[in-house]
Image 1 (cartoon, rainbow, N blue to C red):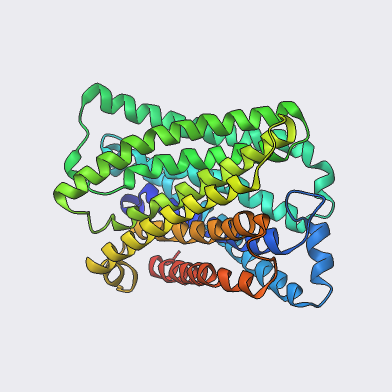
Image 2 (cartoon, helix red, strand yellow):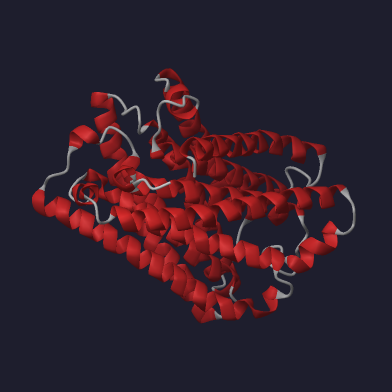
Length: 387
């Protein structure tokens, strides 16, 4: 399907959401499969457990199916969106976009490609035997990949802000939502990508470069959070939220999850190479605060979208289509991922809940429910847009 003038950069959120779902199903392997010798499960851990024929084997098989399925959709939609965008750049709609508030939506592109690197890393870890034996040679390429994505994100950001600050033509009447925070989402994704080599590499130089890159992009993200969320809520209080952009209330969830994971990774990196011992209690407080904020914004966003009829109009009705609807997918992914971090790093690591206990699995249930509800909405939207 060729969209041409009807295309906009927010369509990249379809590919991003699929990638996020693939990562979310990897969390079952991350926290349920034992992997004491490496920071994440690999083929060498996953497939021996898969062959045992236990309850864990069933969970692994279940997770692998969805990791592959959503990774496939991620790459399929990434190629589709890239082709559409190349056509779109030649249109009048694109010229209008780069001279409006909506120019910031271009940040979905480096955001999605940064997610692609994460998906590739997960696929490699799960399906390539003995990959971890050469992982130190892969970390420099990962840093280069995230540096490229980061450069693209910074280029768009500085062009956008320099235009706004030079001309003063920011349209506050169209800022009654949090869509502008897509820039923060993008920068945060680059930050958490840098943090991976910063946490896992045994090479001090790679470790330091990763941590610096993570803190650089995270610092920019936090600075913009203060500006964007204040402006967005001021305009929403004055005008009411834009119906079509209502899902933007949930953009806070993936930002919180990503910055939270980045903080955990940096903490592990500092513990690893910088003689800064990691305290398990700090992981409990960190994950508790982040999960609390996500629940608050989750309930607020749901209540607003339920009251203004967003779900009925843009999700379940066949008469209305909006690419912004795909912004509903990543918050669900992010909430599940942070839930798994909270249970395992916050509760299990501090001896509050025993791993594999009945309480452990009961605590997982609400997060699993959100994950599957999110996957269901993804397929509804994918069918609706005929992608």
